[in-house]
Length: 70
Image 1 (cartoon, rainbow, N blue to C red):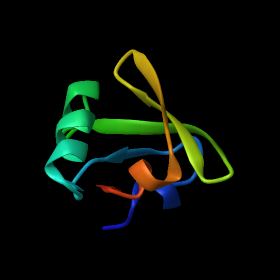
Image 2 (cartoon, one colour):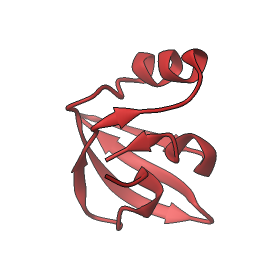
Image 3 (tube, rainbow, N blue to C red):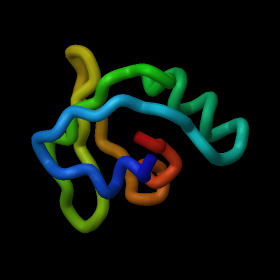
């Protein structure tokens, strides 16, 4: 298991765990980031990520992406 920030661009990974405070977990859940969901890393710039999940693309800060374990 590793944080999402270490996934290579173009790879699809499965979310295994979301860490952090309850507020962060709820925020990510509202965006659709749940355990078992597949996420594709579209690009990474300066540690910030753009990921595709289902039909949506979402930008995540390095800090937030570090709380998503894949």
